Amino acid sequence: MPPDTLLAAVVAATDEVVATRARSTKVAALAGLLAQLVGDELPVVVAMLTGTPRQGRIGIGWRTVAAVDVDPADTPTLTVLEVDRALDELAGLRGAGSQKARADLLASVLGRATATEQDLVRRLLVGELRHGALEGLVTDATAKAFGVPLAAVRRAAMLAGDLPRVAVIARDEGASGLAAVGLTLLRPVKPMLAQTAADVTEALALATGVKPGDQPRPASVEWKLDGARIQVHRSGDQVRIYTRNLNDVTDRLPGIVELVASLPATALVLDGEAVGVDEDELPRVFQDTMRAFGQQDGVAGAGLQSRFFDLLHLDGDDLIDEPLTERLAALERVAGPWRIRGVITSDPAEAQALLDEALATGHEGVMVKDAASTYEASRRGGAWRKVKPVHTLDLVVLGVEWGSGRRRGWLSNIHLGARDPGTGELVMVGKTFKGMTDELLAWQTQRFLELETGRDGGVVWARPEQVVEIALDGVQASTRYPGGVALRFARVRRYRDDKSAAEADTIDTVRAMLPAARPAG
DNA sequence: TAGAGTTGCTCC
DNA sequence: TTTCCGC
DNA sequence: GCGGAAAGAGCAACTCTA
Image (cartoon, rainbow, N blue to C red; front, side):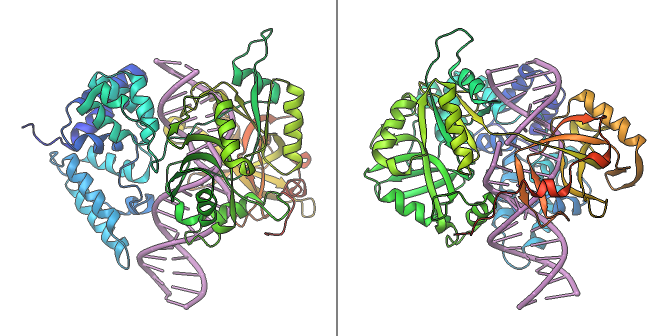
């Protein structure tokens, strides 16, 4: 019988992964590790390597991790199964005194770990493994470790929604075992994701794979609702609802459970959105929707409604390999009134009209989907494209935070201010680190060091002179920022040297972008 | 018991 | 969520 | 084209502190 695998073996593999940028080398290192694992070690380590320990909510975050400081062990003795059991125990603690008990238990585990093992456990707990390999590469490594086709592992992982379990199947049952993994009712499937497109014309071309001069091909153009993604399973009178990350939120959404239970079918897997809707069928403000979605007791969530855009299973038949048009036809039959509005078209003008209509009704934009496409997890293929309007603002940089990881040594996350025309002061409305090339990072590092007025922790304060053009999805009410508004998904477009801070956009302009207030219906 | 602090989830 | 980057 | 990394805002639940 082989010895229990040490956590040190995982550390060694992640060290190899960190040391290279070549995918093939990373996969080889991970595969070498996976191939030597016995029994339950495999699912435990697969979960670790993807940065998501199988215990889920453990109740330890960066604050607790930072507070625990114990001398490391000299020699590695901790096994991966011991770490797994410790995580079980940590996750199980609750009630008065549990925070202290967690910290104590963590300290005892770390005390048995070497310095590098401690580091791995800490990174695992704060959810920032950052070893340059996550689920995608671990999937590759699983295929390599057990000599099974990558496509088979990917498909099984999508359908099972659970890579650790699929790795065990790959090891113990091989390719035929993987092929037998199918969509299982009441067990969530990885949702299909979308890529972006600048406008409907581009979206139509990219989604359908049509090149200039080719015959256009039809796409389904659908309203994109601003809510939370849900996947609803029904088997007989049992209904379960999952989020995009496969968390079970059934208890929060009793109204949707009731609706799906009433649909004319015996078995269903629906893909859609949970949204707040007022009496006039107009969408509620996103924050209202999310507040209701977040509450556990189901009372507030009862006000949320479901709208569906796909059907993956109907009464014993898996539909994931059927073309979208077939799935939509089945969806129309079984849940027509709750279908998200959409049209099948290859005409950019018709798609644009639907986008205009969606925006006028208060929705986020449209999705454009290849009408012939099958249902596939992840972004591969890009058969789904989202189109939403982009707003821009010219704001002033108030300060910058030092970056970490691959941005270490660069000033990265910039603090953004809008002008208050009344006082002449600048009002902070958000931060962003997105949209920066390496070249721009280098430039802004130099620029803001020139403008530096002082430091506070990781923040370098800058003389408020540099104007930056920011692209954003929109604006939302904020309790955190002094102006009462915050930017949603802000990213840098370009630095503007043709504008002074006195010409930057005002806080009034930012506030004017808030969605129209509606009664919370 | 109210408020502060921490965590983890939603937008991905 | 977005964008950039190396492979 | 893929997979990974950079890191934000809002919210609710839970635990701890004063």
